[in-house]
Image (cartoon, rainbow, N blue to C red; front, side):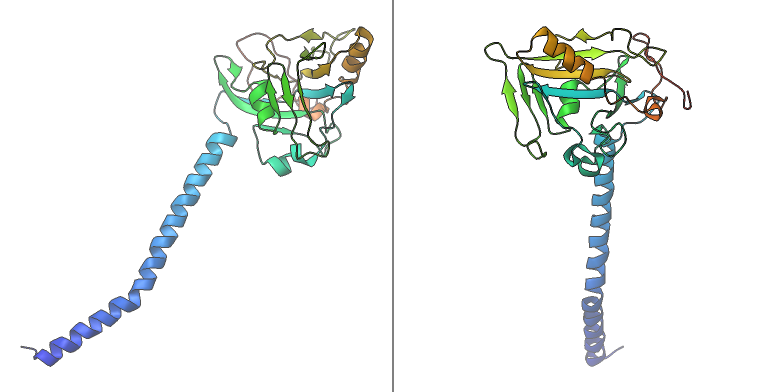
Length: 239
């Protein structure tokens, strides 16, 4: 049988070996924790920013916002994907139709995308409530916040695109009463306006809101299927 000295030396060697291996085990555990956290972060981002599946919606409406007769500049980096990193809602800023074309993604729920004017604008840092609009204060236009009061009101109009790629003559603008829950769709021209405009001033805004036109490639069919809630004009690539 090993003597007490031999057993003591073996025990000391084992103790030193465990002490030597302890940092390696700690690093392995830390690496596993970091990897699990990264997987969780990717899963969360995918769940909140990247809709997918057979009922996936990829919409390109055009947006114009006027406050007291002045058009708000939406061709600002704060609204661009490069800044927001949000696939669900960002403006095309650097493209020819930048500052107008609005990129929206979502999933279909009951035949319509699960995103509204209020929720899509919120992802741009813009607050929209009934009678209340607050622009993103980090944009170059600075803090802008307005509420209904006196004769000044917040309103929304939209025009649907037709199969001939026009909006009619004159354009088929229509007012929207519940603009907070309005669903912006592919090819729509959307005007949000606040103030006390005369008929002529509103007409001028509606005309201005038709430009710039949505680029042809942004009107092409993406992943969105035809919807069961009524006809929605879409175009194949190259049309």
